[in-house]
Image (cartoon, rainbow, N blue to C red):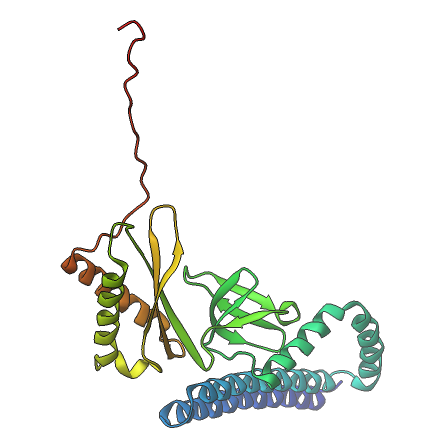
Length: 277
């Protein structure tokens, strides 16, 4: 190989690398602009925006993989004949595919998750014993961050039964245990008043889809009667509404003198008199 051929190879290799870097930069720029445009548009359903963001990020990942693969083949083409290499890779790929059924299963599962819209980035889901926010979604795996900050990588092929708690609408449930000595009708009236105040609150009323309901007695426990306050909310708003309900219920019970018991034991001591006395 003479000097001119060596220089040509180096120039071609540098050109391939430059084009790959530029392609990756363009993909990043376009995806960021699209995401910014999607997030800037306030109209439309939140669920639809999440789905579009997920598709954009997945498209960016696929484009980067395609660019790197093409650049690698073009780079190798400057030094060796890649036709026999591609033929051998086809045979190797067939052999490897027989042993990578799990990987294929993950990719197929990822396709169904995306096409059916089971969940998107930003949704709160539960898969088995894992629950948290979906931070990233690829064709192979779902990345879930739980409340303690742990990041779980769940292969899409393992997602058999999934719970999405931020899809469409949600429900805030607050259970209150009251003492058996309390007047249950009075307790229900106080809770209904609390529910009415949060329904008319300008900060929380817009998050409710229905008027709150007070159900009770829900159950009779060993030490308390369980009463439930239930309200249908917008998707993802149930935790904030439930927190505010608990605060207002505690304040109302303290103001009205309603006892909220806690588990306790009563010990009766009986004096046994002497038989001879």
